[in-house]
Image 1 (cartoon, rainbow, N blue to C red):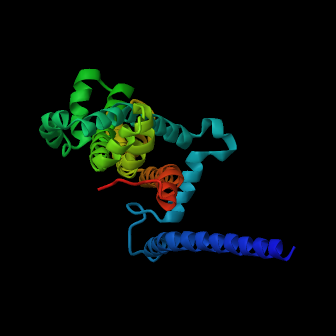
Image 2: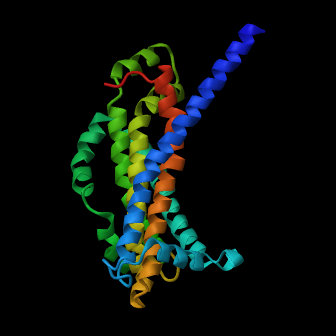
Length: 285
């Protein structure tokens, strides 16, 4: 009974310590943002900035609440814009993953194919995806195809390049050892290639989603017909509705933050962090 009580007490202390660490991390993260918002509010409140050009955070919050229309969420204009933007960005991102990840593994495993395509990748990688928007507009006109196509290019190259580098960074001896033990191609992929390439791959996914999300704004400004955060910001400019413009900017920042921490952060904790802590990931150069 004493041993069990001691174990329970130790476990409770460990849980409390973890909770305190999480709370401290959250406070450390949120404190600079709160300080910045307070400073911004004070600057506008004391007349050091023109509220018609730089509205205070409280004004942006009031305008955002009005656009959100929580009393009638089915007709919430802000939710319609957010939903349209999320659909386009996620569709482009998923499509980029389906194309870039298999191609990245293929090029990472084949030195000849990598040498043949490396100059082309080096040429295309620095190009901003938004530069392709006019070409898509000429080819497909305004609408979903143009927006998703441009966002696809924004996500494709970071994911492809990171996957290639992750695969090429795996120690070839690890592959030889697993093959010598009679592992099938799927076992080789599951036990060596994927765990070894995953740290670089997740970084590429983060960069790809970030590029796609940033490109989305410009693409929607130029090619959206009705909804989208980029469309909302650009349309508000025509009416000098600066508060609505800032609502769109804040939504873009908050959603991007949530995607990175909630989705990719969770994925990283469930895979890379756990595998490294348990010693399952080996063979990186």
